[in-house]
Length: 80
Image (cartoon, rainbow, N blue to C red; front, side):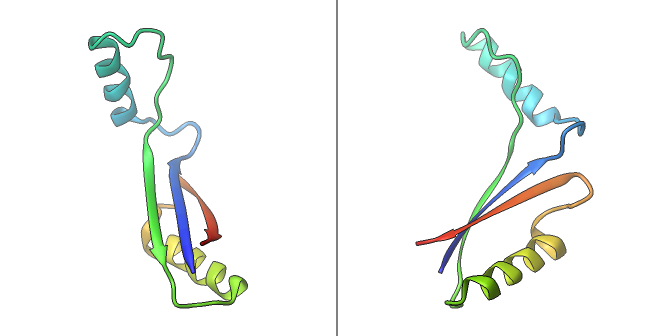
């Protein structure tokens, strides 16, 4: 089973990398970019076929390693 995990900074958390990207976009001629927030995207292939078990395992992975849940949110998409 393939999982896609999107990890983003929580609202209110400063994003210096996003600000650097926003500034660089302006510097190369892309005006009108009001804000940029950067994040992480992961694809994980699991041997598990039960969606409930897979989601539980992925949530544990995010809570323990993949996301810093103090400052980041994560969303899990399951499917082929």
